[in-house]
Amino acid sequence: MSEQGQLARELILNDFELLKTHGASPTLNIIKCYEKDESFFPTDVYSFHVDRSPVSTDTFLCTYFGEASDILPNVQAQQKVRVPEIRDELKKLYDGKDEDFESFLTEHFFDLHYQPKANAQIINLGIGHLWRLAVDHPQSKVLPCVHRAPNEKAGENRLLMIC
Image 1: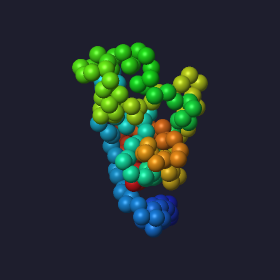
Image 2: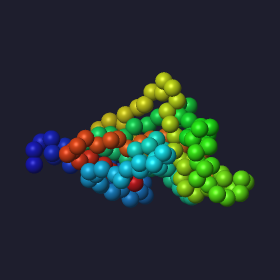
Image 3: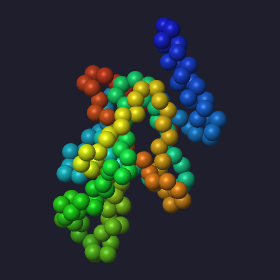
Image 4: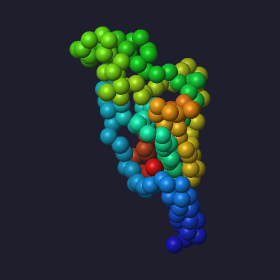
């Protein structure tokens, strides 16, 4: 293995050990691409979104090779279901009682997706940086992290650790 390969191996193993020591279960993924949602309201990982969990947790991730994820400051993001035009389109999909519409949005994960506000500063997480992303859960003391997966380059896989 080359010197750079040895350094990369050490970095990955150290990240895994650090996370395992703190009770996490990291996995290493080679990603060619994710399934893409082509609807008027995409709910795939390429859309800015937050993760949700019924228990107190965080998402950890690190891109070791390939395109890295992006985050968006919460104050620079707008929940898509609050945009009047998008909300009107979602109401056309919904056929239940008016008082149950918010539950419909949650059940179909529409409420987890965001769009950047005008002049938003998207932040790329870069290569080799281990990030802890806050997750939406009932006892969270902080806002969840708005993030998205990158569009992969054709023919280039992505090496990602996540837990």
